[in-house]
Image (cartoon, rainbow, N blue to C red; front, side):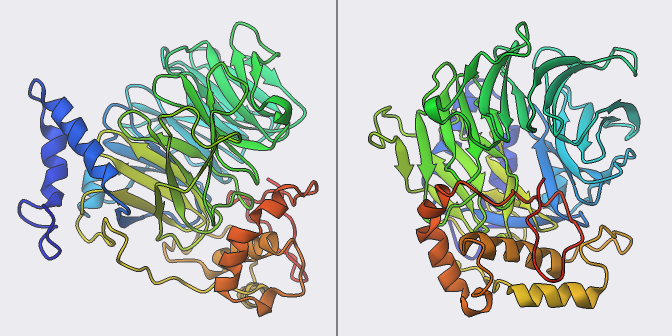
Amino acid sequence: VKSRSGEGRGCGMRSSVGFLSRRELTGEPLIKEEFQRLRLAGCTSLYKKDMLGHFGCVNAIEFSNNGGEWLVSGGDDRRVLLWHMEKAIHARSKPVKLKGEHLSNIFCLAFDSTNRKVFSGGNDEQVILHDVERRETLNVFLHIDAVYSLSVSPVNDNVFASSSDDGRVLIWDTREPPHGEPFCLASYPSAFHSVMFNPVEPRLLATANSKEGVGLWDIRKPRSSLLRYGGSMSLQSAMSVRFNSTGTQLLALRRRLPPVLYELHSRLPSFQFDNQGYFNSCTMKSCCFAGDKDQYILSGSDDFNLYMWKIPKDPEAGGPGRVVNGAFMVLKGHRSIVNQVRFNPHTYMICSSGVEKVIKVWSPYQQPDSLGDLEGRVEDKSRSLYTHEEYISLVLNSGSGLSHDYVSQSIQEDPRMMAFFDSLVRREIEGWSSDSDSDLSEEAIMQLHGRGRRSTRATPTAPAAASCHHSPSPNTDDVKRWEI
């Protein structure tokens, strides 16, 4: 029962979450699952709330295993933060900073199965292993180049995989001597942006490569992939792969293409997912499954929105191209590009992050001081996009470009960073023509965004994907095409 005035109090939704998550009587989980499933299915939007703690872009977020009690986050401020979700949402505690600090941007994180250890990797060419309880650094694993993705073996917490800018996927054992050589599963000339162990068949791993697309690998047969997904279109710029919880399906993100779903042993897509306004070009993003049976998928977008699609039950849905046109839900509230998204199946919370310093928490239940509603009636105060000229002015007036200076330790919005990515979005939409920046209204930009997408997808010479991970010193005459 919803009441507009009293939802956050008494027997309202705030207490429902705690009530549902603490019921452990025999048979109760099934009731809880059905309740959660029906509640999400009846929403057209979600309540939202910001968690503040980072001083720069938030490039990585992961829920803890077995309930998602904790969230770990990392980003451009080089710090690994640990959030107790219930306390953070109720403003009862601030995030804990783990002592091990990176020398540059953090790109990826992973919990082990016990949630006692956290792995973090990033632009400083190393993976740090942290002790969660003591917050100390347990070990460091040196790489040759930036580390973009991490995955812990589902059957052995001592084993983890890393994917790197050097074009290698490495398998590490934390019990080996510090300077021991890791096992090389894959080696390509181009960067591996994502890797994940299959949760049910741990000998299998999926990868996303910047030029070679999405692949499936067997740890017993290194150096050669078992399967290249995509059929005749396998040579794509892929940036993220995720298995569903049963290991039977694989979700992938590709640059300038819609999210795509594969059955584990099938090269051809089961479905692709599209919606007007959705676009993935300017930054590196990740995706995830959602729902009690992974019946939804989630991806952030360059248009500042988070998109949720429902996977059709009918395998023939979507016609010959198997394209699911029309998202189940478009979550609005971010003020810049959305890069990261994770779903917690126990609480039905979604966390998302990107260019902003905030982590946004979405829920079908109202939280203290949350905004929005479940019907999408509450309009957000949208901001105007910065023009290219405004961006240049901000940089010149600041005198420090976009350099990483976190001495101020500010959690406030950074106009320069927002303007930099606005400029990338504008130029991507306009096909990198620089003569019409200041003439386009925000409405025209968004119309172009939805309408011009299909023509740009076919462009063979796409600009290099920028990433919130990197903040190079900008050229004041023009916005460079930053390559990750």
